[in-house]
Image 1: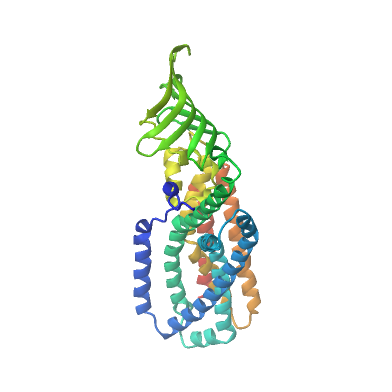
Image 2: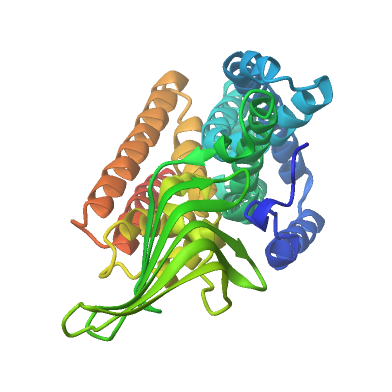
Length: 403
């Protein structure tokens, strides 16, 4: 059966995000109280389009996921309930992908319809400015920033992690019929350099199914990074409260100056409570940055400094990217509104084309900045924030010109 609590890596921390979601809800409630008839009408027309577009795109993505995973899971012996649960868990993982695109498309369509029906022209002729016409949408955009934060920080990584974990558990269960338990869910070589505690770890294999490492070797180092002791064992297992337990091995003490063996002792079982390295942290570089939550990324960055481990740069770029993505709803609004409400003498498709073109430029800038940050050309903070700041400035420029 699927173990939903495996290592707690995918749990959605509702308490952590409660202040953000609570603030967004309160802000939304206060704003709704101040909306007039025009505000409510414009907001209602847009939200109807947004809901339909979101359902349609998510439906297509679920169908694609079913084409990719359905047959494999069925062959692994999954039940109908497990299949339904798997795809239900996987759906939230698509929100971060589709939300900016759906938001842009819905805004262009809804505001374009108002423009084609001359409703915005009538509002402006009555002395209502562009900002007053669209202020309900801007208010919704601020609320969406809180939603994007919660999605990117925890909900989407939870969805990705839990769906992957569930798929693995189904496959592990299927493999138990043809393999021995120590052959299920094996990874390759695992290495880990714990510079804080001056320990170096090595496993020939690690079983995610049994949570055990095989062919374990742990070297303890002195201040000059010279080996002073070593533990070799056939098998090692991590328990949260007991630390690491080693089985069928030998502990060796060495002279750091010469490297000569001073003493060696064989053991059947050896408990090392001060060995507190988490296997999840050891194998973190086997997981994509996009599959980790905001707080997991923060933990990695704090544990591995960029100077000590260049691989951390990729995770740092993702971490600061999540912070910058919080502004994405406002960026989409800034790129869509000025061009969806063009003048009456301008073909609406011209404005739509310009808006889509600018959004494509925004996407290219994100990828370019990500590449530059990953390669160390610019620091991760600059790589994450620069595209958002540039496009907010561009959108603000066109919005001011329109007014």
